[in-house]
Each structure stands twice: as structure tokens, then as C-alpha cells.
Length: 410
Image (cartoon, rainbow, N blue to C red):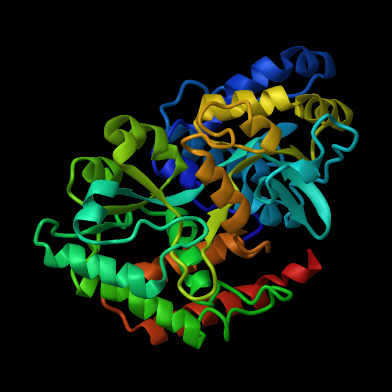
């Protein structure tokens, strides 16, 4: 697998303001004159005007086809977890954005794509996973409202779900978006696996998954994950619109993200609780990295492409991107200029989650395959498959892929 063909990241999966369409608009605003002057190709016309969610998937399809034909545009938008695969495959060139208004060190770590100590991409924003709940519901059933300084423990979370289930008010008190597919699964659930002390692969060299994905801690996560269904806390497959179900009172606690924060706050007002991830024993975790700008290796005008990338790295464009996409500003300076995300703002906790809890998915060319394997394993486990055997087979499949592709030679 020379090019990552994984479906789009959560940005397009959970239906918030579509980042690809917004990036296209911002590309025009930020540097149309620069782009025309330097002859840099823009995003393909086939993506423009697509509906939210559709554009991201269509873009990924177009990029994969273009990469295979060696016809990539100079500037392209790559899903952060796939940067290592694209760099290893020879489709991206390292970029140099030194000397710009916004240094890379000012950005959320998850918004910079690196592979083998070289920078290949950067993004203007990220998103953050969070739990949503009604404060009134939690208070009614004697459930502590957690904070970033004191998140729920596993025992507290399990106890809360038991109380809510026992109340009889909720068929499934927990909503975790299990009706989604693609990158949502590793993005949403592997951070919980990591909080249990497991992971998708041994990150020391990224040479094997056996011993990590099928470790004792990983099996404990899988067993707990399955228990959410067997105990009736969560549906094996959620509805088409998990956030609407939560807002309509169908569930009490929802595992969602920053993209639904404004909508939820508008509906619930001060009753909305924005809750940090659970600490399952190894610290709270959320996924990190969304869409990022990169430069293709076949670009005929690399100087022009780099000029645009440097030109775009101004705080005002980080602000514009966040406002246009409804996402988290990629720098602290930008966050201070976006209503709700400035220190003390109603969504400022989400920025803190991204800074404190975000873990990027494994930085290896094998990631698109790892993602697919994990999705299937997690879905099988929810359907009743044995956690230990399922994770053991998944780890073996990943190890075989690592040996077959010899990624270290890339």
C-alpha cells in the first residue's frame, strides 16, 4: 500500500462545518494573488461546492487517484494521520516555513505533520473530543460534574452509567457514535484504549503491534468496551445523528467533539456540561490531528508553493480558518481572537483538552492499514467477538503488513 486510502478523518465524519470547503475558501482569501503570481495549483474544481462531509471524502479519492498517476497539485490538504504514509510513499516534499509570523512551536503539536524528523505539513486548526451532558441530569442522579483538574475515573464513570441506566429514563444512557465508520473508530476509541495503558502499536520504532495491541491493558479496554453494550449502557450501533439524539434527551452522556459544541450550547445554554475524557488509569486521552496543508513532490514550482505556505502563516489566517470551520484555533494567539475560545470563553476548555490530552495516531506509513484493522476489530468486539483473540489476530495482521511493506526502507 504505497498511498493511504483510508476514509476521511473525523472532521468529515461527524458532520460539522466541512473543513475542506472552508480551506478552499480560505486559500482564495489568504493568497490568491500569491498563488497566481507563483503559478501554484489550487484544490481541484471537482471538490468545490460539494456538501459538507462529501467534499472531504471526494477530496481523498481525488488525491489518491492523482498520487497514483503522479499528477498531484502543488498544494494539497492531507488528513494528519496519513502524512507519514504519503511522505514515505514519495508523494510529499518536506516544507520549510521558518521565519514566518507564526513559528511552528506556537502551534498545537497535533497540527504539525512530521515524519523522520522532517516537517511535511501544518494545519490551521484541530478538533477535540469531549463528553457532553446536561448538568441538571447529572445533579439529579448525584453524579459529580468532572473538571479538567479532576476528570472522572473509570469507577466513577461506570457508576454514573449504572445510575443512569437504573433510572429507567434512558434506554441507552451513553452515546458514543457507534453508528459511524471509517476513521471515527480509531479517532474516537483508541484514546480510550491508550488511557487503559494499551495502544495500536509499539511506538518505540513502530516495528510491531503484538505485545501492545493485544496486551493485558488492551484486552481490559476491549472487555470494558464490550460491556457497555452487554450492560445496556450503549447501543451496539447508534443512530444516524448521535448529537441530535442527545439534545433530544434520548441519551444522558454523549462522546462527541468540539464541532458540535456551539450547536449544543445553543440548545442547552448554561445546562450544557463540557466534560473532559475519562481517566481510565493512564491519564485522559483524546485523538489529535486534522487536515493539514502539504506540498507534493511532483510540484513544478516548489518555490511558489513554499512562498504561499509561508505567506499563509499569519495569525489572522489561523483566526479566519477557525471561524470558517467552527474548529479549534491552532495557536494560542488565534484562540484569543475567536469568540468563545479565548481564555475564560465558553469553549476554552476544549482548547485546553487539545493541548493537554491530545495523542496523535501512530506516526508510521502503516497507519492507514492499522486504522482499518482496528476499526474491524473494535466492531467485531462490540458484536460479541472474544476481545483477546480478536486483538491478537489484529496485532498479527498489522505485524504482517509491517514485514510485507518494509516501511523502514521508504
